[in-house]
Image (cartoon, helix red, strand yellow):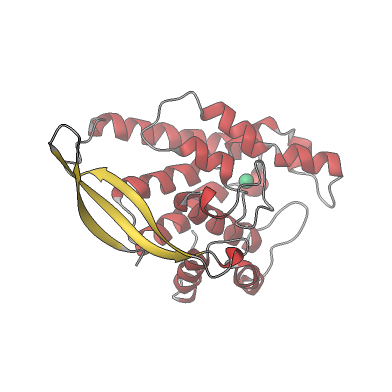
Length: 246
Ligand SMILES: [Fe+2]
C-alpha cells in the first residue's frame, strides 16, 4: 500500500486546533542517491466537506468522458487509448490506496491526458513510418497544448497539471518542463506508467504493436530512473494477475 493514514492536529496561532488527515509514506528516489524522505500525498480537512455537489460532479465527469472521445475521433489509431490508460491508472491508484479525491484526479486526468493532440495535424498523427524532427516536436507539443486548453476551467481535480506533466520523467529527461523527481506529483507518475504500458502494447501508425514483454521490459528498465519504482511494481503485478486493458 502507498502509506499510512495519520490524523494530525495543527495548533493555530489563535489557540484553536485544526484536525487534518494525511496520507504519508517514506520514499526513496534512486536517481538522487539513497535519499529517503517522508512524503505527504494527501492532506485533507478532516471534516472532508465536499464543496462540489455530487450531481455537479457527475455532470463534470460525463463532460470529461465526452471530451475524451472527441480527440480520439480524429486519431483512430489511438482510439480508446485514453480510456484504457484511465482504466489501468485507476486500478493502480486503487491498489496503492490513494484517497477518493486522488482516484478521481487519476481517472479523469488519464481520460484527457492526450487532449492536446487535437492541435496536432491529423496527417502527422496517422502518418505511417518514421516522423521528421519537426513532426515529432509538433506531437510533443500536445502536453503543453492540452494544459493551455484546460488551465482556465475550474475543475475539482488537478487535471490540467496531469495533462501537462504526463511525459515528464523522474531523471528530468521528459518534457515539456524537464521536471525531476519529487517535482512530479504522484497522480501524474501513475498516469505516466499506465500511458507507457498501454502505448507499447497497442498499435501505433509508426510501428506495430509490441508484445506485453516489451512493455514489461521498458517499465522494469526505467523503474526508479524514468518511472516511479513503486508504481511500476504495482502496474506489473496487476498485469501479471491478468489485468485486462479493455
Ligand atoms: Fe501523451
